[in-house]
Length: 261
Image 1: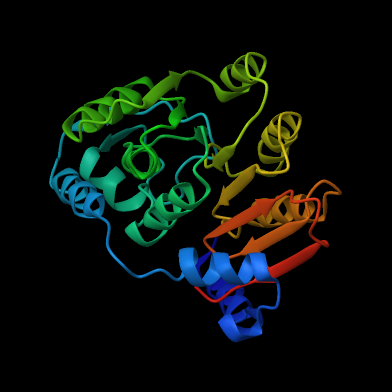
Image 2: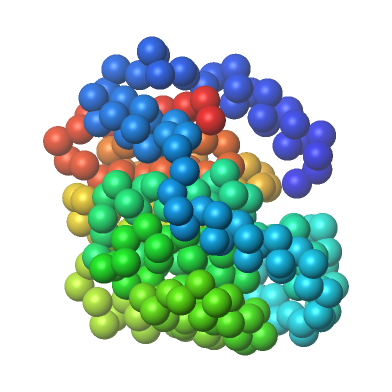
């Protein structure tokens, strides 16, 4: 994704995006007002952001096994933890949004496809401590570092599932009857994104929430996002530029919202 193209896409997004007064769906209005736009602080925010600050100062190097689309900023296969924390970890604004979404929907089970350093996992897990978070990570060294970070935060409701997502995700889904909440951040290419979406779709319910990261990261991701929104099973979709939200609420008419965030 070139910066020029990204900037152009962001301008289009801003032009199309609605503010609160333009939202007429009661479900989306409530979600937008009370969850997406919520500006209050939760105690866990400070704990996780303090850890993020520590990691940004950690110059230890890790050998990287990159099974996804790779890093367009730092494509090398030996990276400092500080660089991963600065470049690859989800910014606080969006990680905290994921926290609020889990806190709001209270899913029993959360899947995270792509762990990185585990900061987003920590937000997902601390939002609803009775839920179980399963985080899938292809790089064993990053998975190990993430587990160390969760230990520092005293989080016990996260299970790391290491290995190639093409094998680990189908194996996991074969053993579960439903998926409640999924954060897709494991691969930013069209074919893998659509493949993982279709796999998880087989276990979705009307209450399931699917969240896709970096929906404008590339032309491939944008194409995948558009096809996912158009899928017959999807009734509501929300474009927040950095992330996209998908719902399957059968009582809702099919609608797409581009919301200012």
